[in-house]
Every structure is written in structure tokens, then in C-alpha cells.
Image (cartoon, rainbow, N blue to C red; front, top):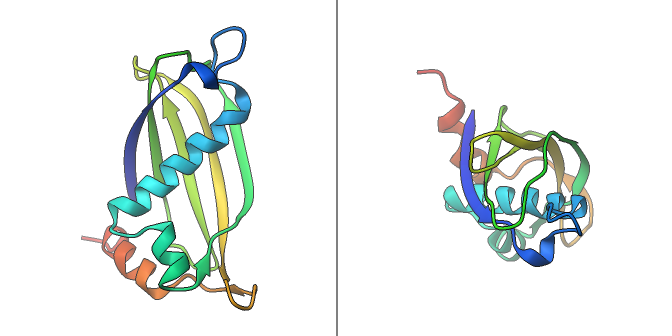
Length: 138
């Protein structure tokens, strides 16, 4: 299992009339979590696309709203991979407020697509190589 945390402050322009993080912005917070998790492994979406010719479109996303995230709160985005990816990569997402209380949780499932052909492919070996140590038993 691999878990990564990243923090982001709720900006005024992301809130609704009540001062709550607008529900449509949670998907962007999920994306921030995924991108920063990969970056923590020394990988980037840009490199996946430009160097390896692999795109990672979202196949499905599920989320549940537990309590509101409010304007100017520092949100901790916790992203977890519970299993080594194969055909798909599934990110478990949890957003916590400054008090450490769960605000939102969900999953995002992505597949791997060869940019040139547009066809789905198995998980790239370089990604598996970076993740494998976190899934090996000690």
C-alpha cells in the first residue's frame, strides 16, 4: 500500500454562497492528490505523456460528502493506492479539515491509453517498478 498526503487551502473563488467548498471542485482536489502522489514517486503526468506516450483518462469517480470544507481551511488530501495497478489504477481519496475530521472521501479509477493508437494498455512497467516496493511483504 502506498499513501501520500498533500495540503491545499480552500480559496475564496472555490466556495459557494455559504463559504463552503463548491461540490464541483472536489474532483480538482482529487486530481491534485493523484498528481502529487505520482510526483512523490518521481513520476509526472507530463513525462507519462511525452516520454512514454501514455495517457491516463478517468474511467469512474465516486465520492461521499461528510462535512463541508470551508473558505480558508487548509485541507489535507490523502491519496492511497491499496493495490498494485494492472489494467486500472484506483486511487482512494480522503480529504481532511484542519481539525483532522474527514470532509470527503471517494475513489477514482483510471486506465492507461497509448496516445498514438488510443487503445488501452496494461500499466506501464516503469510505474509498477516505482510502486512495487510499497506492496512487497517485509
